[in-house]
Amino acid sequence: MAGVDRPRPCRHISETMSTTISPAAIKPISIVIAPNQVLKARARPVQDKDADVVRDLIPRMFAAMYAAPGIGLAAPQVAESLRLIIIDLKPNDKFEPLTLINPEIVAATEELATREEGCLSLPNMYADVTRPAKVKVRYLDEFGARKEIEGEGLMSACLQHEIDHLDGILFVDHLSILKRNMIMRRLAKEQREKKR
Ligand code: NI
Image (cartoon, rainbow, N blue to C red; front, top):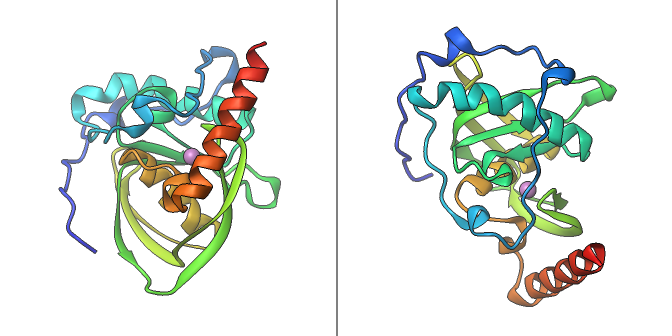
């Protein structure tokens, strides 16, 4: 895999971040629907100066993701162009929230796997996407600690899908132009009908 800029760890995030998600205190945040410029942009790395924004953002993103419901969400999907993603696959119906700040894929298998994917920014749209079967991702957690996760199966697809969002890539961008256009037209039609 090509080298990626190594962002500095966020020293100050650990001092200020809380993992407690108290729903009463959470301001709702809405999810951006495609097409939208913020979904196409390359998001910038989270830095120390973003600690307050990120601390406020994480619980609101989890609230939006669980409400949708979804298993992953990237900051650009809530109109914050920052390299921050959240994931919860809820194994055995238990909450297992994962916050990844400045995630980078550091290794990927040559072996590929195809799974059906959807996206909260493309509601009700699904398609098979082929990606590396396993990936290793380096990131900072919500406390600013350096972490590494190896994902396979659903976790692998989810990590790659969410990290794609940070580079302005949607799952439909992995499809043929024909399939992509079909989905985007169907989405636009559904969104128009919803507004009526
Ligand atoms: Ni998505």
